[in-house]
Picture 1: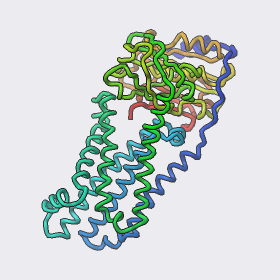
Picture 2 (picture 1 turned 90 degrees about the vertical axis):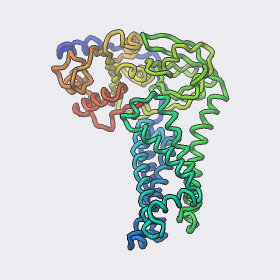
Picture 3 (picture 1 turned 180 degrees about the vertical axis):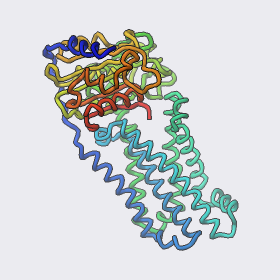
Picture 4 (picture 1 turned 45 degrees about the vertical axis):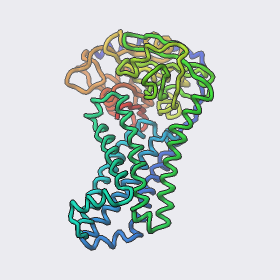
Length: 476
């Protein structure tokens, strides 16, 4: 690809035709929802610290032993609060999910989780050292006394082990070695860890035993988090899937190692999905059905059917090719912010790499647009890897959109969204040649993490504000 090729491609792929389908009007997501949720979470932490101060936490800092014990109480309280915030973030409450998107929620959940885990270990160390410094049993005697004689402590130890499993497997290098299904199963132990820590806090925590306000606060916090999980992670998905059946309608191979699945049934019309969003899918086809996998919609919902398209990269995706029509389907969702509701401009750029083109294809079909409003850049290693290329070309022609394909192996030794044939161009130069007005557009991205980051940097370098760049990561 040369700069001349880029200019010629732009001229030859413009198709000023009018769309024949009137897409659904989507209400924008209020920006204040996110600000309000951030304020709420900080208020929870602030209230925890206030309770610690009110219960003599500052005064206890005067002595070495009592000071370590007091700081241990504080770190334990904040760790508990952040642990519950983690659970709440991933409870998939519709208002929070719409405000943040699963991508931002998952990354925030990760940062809060590591912070909570570090504070938990600070709590364990400080409390142990503080009690050992003020008691007659010494360090090892204090440890044994804690574990064997304090109410709920054995459960707390088991909960800490469960949380350690979750944290260790969430480190990026360890996460990369695990299949998604295995990581997801281990990650569920986080709920077990949070639950096992509760008796210890109830039975031995000073804030629970001496302050009615603290007791009411913590019981309320635990109840709200447990209720959110029961309602939005378990109850609502089960009700949506079971009140009206959803079944596989057809299975189609799009390319070697790429499968599309169409589902339909009475339950589909109640899902209220938007083009570009994704669901967590469970296909009741045999062992392994309990593990959900996230797949984006690859076509705009029509009220009767949903279509997903996935590359075979693990056991879950590999099973898609073996599904049979009539297989029962359970879904959670819809989730994600790659949809019309986050759009701020009439003009839009859709960039997809590999299988990441699938939500872009749904957006192209579902967006409200006039001729020239939408440009699609489709990146793939080879022509055979251009999934849904014929559909995208037909849609672009019908909608008056511009559709570019960018093929070829990656530039070696460089983080870029471009192929090797365009190595003489910077990422921003190539993007500006294809889409000269990219700074005036909303930019939607989907692909591998490295490719999306390179494309994001290119859009920023071309003048696109960061708040108008929308992407969804499925690895954290």
